[in-house]
Length: 345
Image (cartoon, rainbow, N blue to C red; front, top):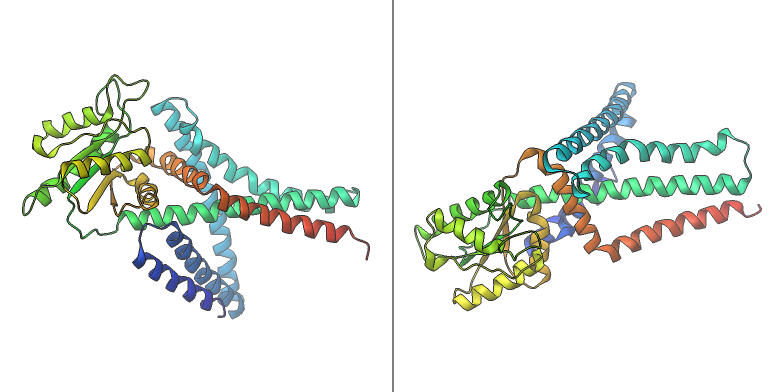
């Protein structure tokens, strides 16, 4: 029952942190930590209860292994679908690589840790193999925990109800196909139009800011193509102010803020993107000092796993210093344990 204490502490931290600002990645960390402690407390309590409950714990562990295996196979299948539907690229390979890693890396960790006991190897080699196995195991755990924090809180934040009436609706670009708006981008624009129509129906109309520059393989700026679509769907020309110079999400947010100010409609800003991109866009908005909130639009189901993995990797890279500290700390502890085990008794 002692594990209920940290579960409660993390739950309180989650509630307080989210109320202060829902656009914090730490909210996901607190949420997953609270749920993890609660689950572990339940398992410990069941394991102490008796043979029947212990059998239930064993069954639960086996079920977890089966679920992980099914998830890995599903990711591999999704990777094949992505390659067939979207073409060969590093981004489209992510779900396939993740699925293979989920199947292979835990096995590698177990083999490295248990192999020394099966072979007659020098003690230094034994220790190095075990240390390497522990590092692989830590890497698996760290990746799983951080992805759980990101993925779970992405879902939670995407369902966050925004009560402020926006004075500006920014639509993030995502690439054109032969100069035209593709289905993925169209879903963002349709979501923006729905919000625009609902706000304009009973109050001052917000400005619509389709945001995106011209890529090397695009015949025109994304912002111009998006503005054309918005106007074609009935948006008032006086309310459409495209931003056509940005080349990244951060620039989308920064330059769109300038467009909003130039249009004289200062106030609450609502950013529209696809659901898998919501949390990262919100984190970037907070990092530039914007009070913008973010809402998501639907995405084709087959596209979601790879998209979430790309967002996860991007966030891990953006927080690379923190991740490096965590990994180096774990490596230092393993190294110290290895050296200690080699010291003469």
